[in-house]
Image (cartoon, rainbow, N blue to C red; front, side, top):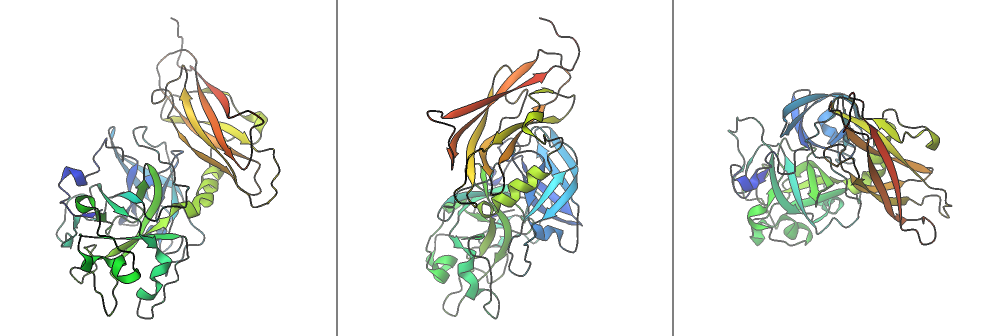
Length: 402
């Protein structure tokens, strides 16, 4: 990624190591490469399904973090079962790592609201760089670099149906794809203003668009993954040709589409949970005291139980959660995490997984907390606004005294 207004050599366009995007990764699958993002539990990367066309079932995932460059092979690939190549519907895949992700790589939560349209987002990826005025660089022969830019979600992709293809048939599922155009401040190059009366002249020097190699790359609202890059297009009508150079090359006047992550959160959540290793089968079997291990990370689980009654069987119950340091410290003894846990229809519980940071340093047993609050669709009981659970990390590295 990304074609930008300013040059990719400008540090404002680079997602440099340590800038908060080290969980955005490069994927190589059957010789082609794309982008992905490490999700909140640290076990899997979310990316685009079309990277795994023609029955490709594995990938290498390349991390660039403060701890260096590390390549990890996949252990499992799951393409969304509703993936539709012709209309880019459900263009999502989950790729599980065969070993622990680098501790230095950020883990990202997913956007769960329904108000993405009209919001500014940050797109990050490894696609071919370029500029809005000339499109992607045809002579770019360097190693892929991680670039960032901003844009704004303008509309639902389903609204563009009549502009796709000679027959005007575009059967994007309503509510599942988001689109943005690449603006340069001029009305004649405002694609979505010209085509569907969604005018906007852009974000100035920070604006950008995805390009080849950005497939699967995240679009962040705040620090949450709201979109996954899927495609670009140049669209026109008999009365408007907004593309500046009449070439499909991610230049000004073109549009791009992202899979709307909030529309797929149940599939993402339940797919991740199904692959948790050594997860407790019952509430009574939850381990409240865990060994830290000697390398990488070790999962520890918190069980969140719903004992209420659903008047509507399709009702989704949720709580927010956040880890809190005790004698065990976030970033040193465990990886801090926070988010929203949803208990879906036909479920009465769900697990929150936290990664313990393993080391070989003798130290005392230490504890940390998980706070659960803001219940939606249920209550904790009269007057109760928060629940807290504790986990103890046991020293397994020899004697400690002090």
